[in-house]
Every structure is written in structure tokens, then in C-alpha cells.
Image (cartoon, rainbow, N blue to C red; front, side):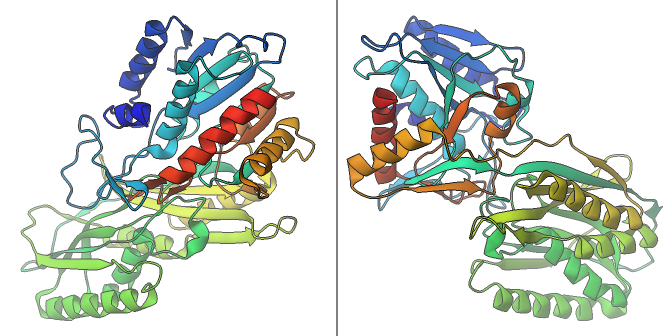
Length: 470
């Protein structure tokens, strides 16, 4: 916890990990530990085996240094300089207005604690801290094959204590770009800004089956209903990170004078319907509708109409469940964001996940086809592979035995629908035995993210025991 508290004060948004990298380098230097940093910012800190463990095979402890930076609407928090504000409540460490960054700062802090404690029995250790995991696993993707030498890897980026992960889904992004012409607003147009916010959001893998409000699709749904009243769309902004469920959506809309009150009333009725539909999953929904002054122009009506149709048609949510593992989501897609970009462009961001590579690619084509039919130019990211479960894993067996011995109950061995860097490690280090586990986190990738402190104690006890007995 001492290390994690320090980490909460360090800015480390994906792509801007310079300060956390420097922190790790200073940590290693102050303890006389060997430290390597590659051109991407991946850090490897090594520690020799403790006495009696010199002949044991080496172990890699791995976590990522970046965090998803999400905050509540209207918050003035600046992730580039402000420390995370957190409180301890009912045994949880929680950040109410922002993400906490326990994903995966607590994994980084755990590896640092192991390195810092000379009383722990362990084989030779390589602690690998990767960058930009949240935006495409860039650090793991760019890691050189000789960067680590251990044959067992323990990933510290799982979020349910008492669960051991031995497989994960692969993922990729599909991004559509709409080009539009500017349209002069009709004379005497009444201009309003409409906002729907307060969605719970969450992780686009772990939480995609929760049926939560999606700000992108639901705001487009409102615009679709309002279209009959002759509206013009001046701006549209919804969602945020491609691996987070969109918590809000809004935009500036111009309305013919005689239709203005009808559209405002429609908005109020629409939000009331939304609150009823999402009363269980998103009880905090709220809205704003206010008249504004707008001196700019609007999106041409043809593009605006096609954009709306695309946003309400792009699939979102669970597409298929695994036929092999009960309760495991096999394939899903997240309609993550829509943003105004320079040079009269509108960008729609989505993310597809699947444990079946061919289904992930097919789903990406389905999403792309909707956007292409609406006139968008589409590109796909390179994506990353899934991690196929190995039921014969030695480290899995040791972890299960350790948990049973320490706590007297059987842990759960599973695969998850979220993406882990282990999928890329299997390509670079095909003989490596891997497992992922961690303390209990809730609400990751959204404000209100929290860490269960009692689970952190159990997680750490298991990790130390596994290193001793592996």
C-alpha cells in the first residue's frame, strides 16, 4: 500500500508514462537492483534468487504502468498533474470522481514490494513493467524476445481475488471517420445543448454483459427521434476510451423556432424512458437541456442523417457466449465513442473482443460494414491475440494448492473476456507457463473504481507462498 499510495500521485495516462518509468528506475537504483528500459519505456528490474533458491527456474512478475484516465462530467481534475483523490470506506480504497488506477498500479506496487523485501523466499526474479497496455498493449507488443528469460510468468492484472486466470480474449479496434460539409443554419434557429450523463460505464470486457447504458448509442437514439422536427446537428460528443463503456453523450442541436418546445419536451420524455429502462443497471442517469448561443455552422444534413443511422445500428454488447466454458462471454463489441475532429471529420470508435480469432475478425467486418454503408472511411487496428488456456499448467497447479492450503477453500480457475498481455507473450515466448491473478477491483475504467483491501492481503499472501513453492 505504501508503494501504491506513491503511485497514485504519479501521472501515468497511457502514452505518458515517463514519470512512472523514472520512479521505477530510481527505485531500482536506490536498492542496487539491475534495471533495463527499452525504447518504448518497458522496464525490467531483476533480483537474484534468495539463498537456497539459486537453482530454481526464474520467475517473471508482470504488470502495466499506465492507467485509464476517466473522470466525472464537469470535474476539473487534471490527470497530467493532479494526484488521485481517494478515501478508505468500509474496507475499500475508492476514488469517487475519477478512476483509481489500481488497474494496474496495484500490480506494479505488488512487484515493487516483492523486490523491496529481502525476507521473502523466491527464485531469481524479473519484474516486467509494460507501457500503454490500456490503449493497445503497445508495450507488450513491442517487447523484444530476449527482454526476459524466466520460464514462468505471473501476470498481476486480474481483478477477482480467489480466481486464477489461464486464458483471455483477443481484441481489436474498428474506427470509422465521417467527412462532412458545413451547413449554414436556417434563420432564427433555436440552439440547445442536450446532455445525458451519469451512466455507470465500466470495462468494455468485464462489464459488457451487464446491459448498461451506452451514451453513444442512446444519444444517437434521441437524435433519431428528434430528426422528424427538422433539427440540425452542430456538434456531437459521446463516450471516451475505446475500452470503456460510454457513460455520457451530448451535443449542440439547432431547431426550427416552431419546433423548439416540441424537441425539448421530447428530450424530457426520452430521458424519463431511459431512466425507467436503466433503473437497475444505471440508477444515476441525469440530463441537461439548455439554450445556448451558437455562431458556427452545422453538419450537412445528409452526413448527419447517415451518422445517426450508423450509431443506432452498430452492434453493441455481447454477441456470443462460449459453448465450451459456461458463463464465459466468447464475443462482444463496444461502441465506445463519437468525437468531432479537425478538418470537418467525425470519428466513431469501437472495440471488438473474442476468444475465437475468426469471430473477432468477422465481428470487426460487421461493424465496419455498417459504417461503410453510412459513408465512413474505416480502419482496423492490428489487434492482439487471445491466450489459449493450458489445463496442464504447473504454475496453475501450484497456485491452486497454495490457495487451498492458506484459506481452506477451492479457488476458481477460469478464462476471462478482457484482454491481457499474456496473449502477446505466448507469441514471443511460446514455452512460457503463465497465470494471472490479483486482488478484487470493482468499477475499473470508470469513476468510482475501488480496491478491496482484505482481498489485497490474501492475494499478496498467495503470491509469496507461490514464489516459495513454485
